[in-house]
Image 1 (cartoon, rainbow, N blue to C red):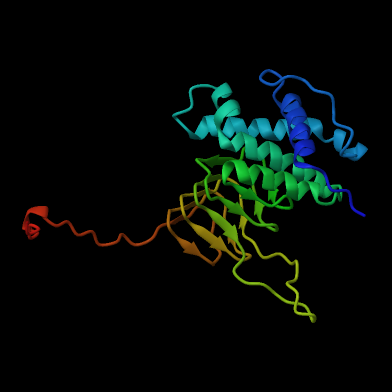
Image 2 (spheres, rainbow, N blue to C red):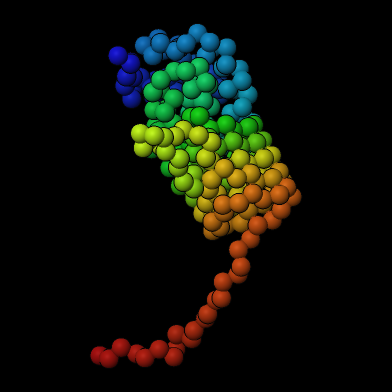
Length: 235
């Protein structure tokens, strides 16, 4: 029977990870033994620390409201979700069952950001604000990518096997380096967004986009009425 960790055990594990990645802000703790983490995982700790710190650097670079590095580490949802995701991704690659998905769902419940542990995300990744961001299982994201709130990197449709079950095949977008996607945009299917591209907000996108592009929707018509022309309610 596959071991099922408790939420408290996972929280203690992530408290340990915070102390390893940000020792200047969180106390050092002993590595928890009850989760039976594979020995190979501990060799990945330096790279997890490096990657999460590049995510903090990306937030500093992209948000003029940030006052210092500590503010990002202690209060921004990006930091919390990425330390969970990067830990979960390392465990996923090692074939650890259940724990990777449980870790990312723990972060999802706290931040509103849903990242599947199998998704591939490069360094200097930035999610500004974050609420409602969804990144699917087979998504591939390059380096120096910025996503805003409400962005979905999802599947357009599914393929089914002979038994009628959805097949686990590549079905989510590829975002190359230096791509920015603004709020409430959905990019669906196995499409590629070329490097150094900007995708505007509120766009439904299901096609490849070449590098160095700007994608915008047509400006909607705006009507402004004089409130004084409305009939007053009868007394």
